[in-house]
Image (cartoon, rainbow, N blue to C red):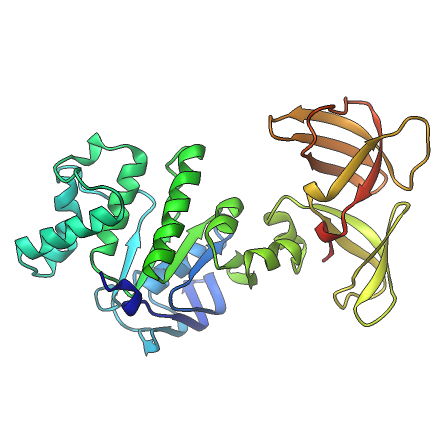
Length: 354
């Protein structure tokens, strides 16, 4: 398959989609580089699936422009965009075999049966599905059905491959495995992929870049690390990684850094151009350090409200002077009990002014 050669960039320029008075996507602009995987992430109703359907040509823009591989496809129908989509439901034909399902698009476009079957078998082999040609979808596991849907999309050798919540029908363990398979395939074949999910862990795991959407607009876009470490506002901080959002007091010390006071703790942090005074601070759960307090003093003291053992780590809910904190602690040898007084400290890399 010559997919890497065919992979194309996707560009949105001030794209808006309205349904009457309802704005589903508002003046959205972004670039998906050829050969990269970009995830559209956000809660239900934020506009991410509409954006995906606009790329596919299943919806038409109200205003703005869409380019694929530098070509203006804004007014082209779905059949002329050279884009394939893997749907949330997989949309396999239940009465057709695996091979017939994968062949379907090629046969519909007029390819001879033998050539279509050969291409379909090649696509199935790429997904590790050789030998399943004659099975019906009902005879496959959920993960196998998902891979057949991918094979059916790949066999058309699209310039852009689209995924709409592709793992939502799988259990947690299978989701982790299949998302890894999708990422490996994308990198191995050099595919341009636009991927939609509401699962932030999934987005962090598979993406070169993430576009976080909220109420029809882009809240922030960047690499997984940028979004996790430097969220631009409370919404992004809370949506990516369950951040604790608390109030602190900022005193700027130079062009980049400031002193942020949280209760009795004083932290040197990038002020990110925020004015002095009360600021919102995002604290990642794994950035909180807890130590048992045996009658001594500490700058910030809290009380364990709830302790949950999860095998690889502990989860705590801690009542503190700056508010309730959700804490993930990798130390499970000596769990802190509910009611215990604890000294609270913070790792600087997981604390951000937003």
